[in-house]
Image (cartoon, rainbow, N blue to C red; front, side, top):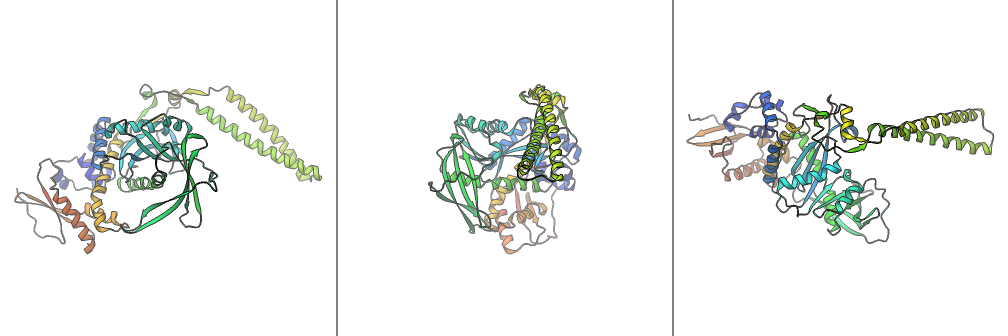
Length: 504
């Protein structure tokens, strides 16, 4: 696990990219490594059982530390699959339509640290997966079932069934957007309050305050759900955006709910960072299962058959076309009552009459055809009939959890540098220069020293910030990760030292 963790921190986003690493140097650090890619993939697969994955998730949560935290962000991040396997389709944000998709369901802390993830296909809807994954998260993080947790979720969770179920639960709240809100619930003259969002700019002392107005009430579609109508200025300040926030928490201060909702960007930004710098959207293995092999492992369900849905879409399309045709005929009849139609208009009327007869006949035929179809069918049996497949994502799951551990270690170490450097425009990129610096390992009189040589030129400000991070690490007396318990010392080198000393 350490080898892959270090590989990720050094920029190898997948197994193939590890061929760029210096394995003799890694052997000095770790004692031994697996160099070739094929044995690495084999080892990953052997280790990627659910028990080991849960242990890694527990380790990840422990290093972040969530004691006392009860607010979290939940989001299913879709990954568009372009391979040949006949996997299930679902909504894919990248292509903005339905397509072959894998879902990586994430739970983040409100500070933006990824804590928990699962990788699934679209067999179960997210509104079903959410409750299952919350319980898994509780178990892995050792959070008692009595503790009330709040999850901030995008509008994909929106459904009356979910809200009704939430009302029955004493230990879970959600905060989400109202789907398809028409911006028509703001009441002039009603009690209106104000709040603000505090956003950092380029340094710790530089803030932007965004004021908003809100009205707090109950949702007209469910009196047990709270609705917060919020008006906030557009980014250019020229207008206002009006949104509706829903929650089953009827007592929490409204400002806390609104601020949590408007800070969801922190999770979206982390997805982008995980993709760019940690390769979270990459496939680790191309193994798969046929759904016929999974039949006895999954809970079957009755659902509306794909044929029935497809036929219903055809019927809806025909009805829409017929409605348009009837409207055009009606307009011509109105015109005919006022004046005589031209030959062109008369010919057009005849064409529309013929279209009406044709569409009406086709519509009745499709409705009769649909009436003979079985509406509700076994979902698993239908998937088997369609020869659907499911990717074996355990190896990717295991590798991705290592990646989020790497991400969190990076950010936990980075926090001290950010405080000292205090320039948010490029601090992440600058800090990468330190953790990926070249170095020389010296073994002198039992002392192990790492002289680090960042590729970039160090300004006094950057050098001071780097030195502070290194000093903080040295005070913790880190050990060489080869299990020998030998202490190491880091040193920020200013120029190449011509003397390299090694003992036997």
